[in-house]
Amino acid sequence: MKNITRVLSEEHQHILKVIEIVLNECTQIENGKEPDKTFFNEVINFIKKYADGYHHAKEEGILFKAMLANMENMHCNPIPVMLHEHDTGRQYVKGMIEALACDNKQELIENAKGYCYLLQNHIYKEDNVLYPMAEQALDESQKQQVEELYNLVQADEFSEIIIQAFIDKISRLKSI
Ligand SMILES: [Fe+2]
Ligand SMILES: [Fe+2]
Image (cartoon, rainbow, N blue to C red; front, side, top):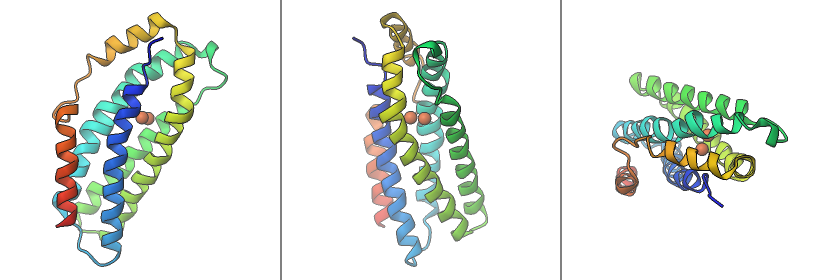
């Protein structure tokens, strides 16, 4: 039996690692540290290109569509909520960019923490509810198709190979 969500759960682990670093940075700012713009710009770049541009693109463009085509095999439809949460995440990122542009520390922390808590919760729901539903709702040939479509999506500069280096880099920036 093919598994088409394990790879997405592995991507979640990278996102959760970055979130942990961001929450740590927010705590330090709340304790008086000045926000490091380079750090936040790197984080925003990661969210836009990897979390949203790669991971969410695979969910929205491939997995969710395959699930919606198999609604009769699902006991409920959690996809509208998932899409709404992706959009809310984008709003938080917009808020972070605006806060950085006008040096608004409070707004930066609020949006950064809002994003982190939203995504932690979102990822928990996907790993524990949505992905198991997908594994159960799709048959083998549909899973094969999903896998082939995944392979067409490029991670841009955040390939699996360099993502660990990126996480190490922002960990270092955070500790400066
Ligand atoms: Fe998602
Ligand atoms: Fe996800």
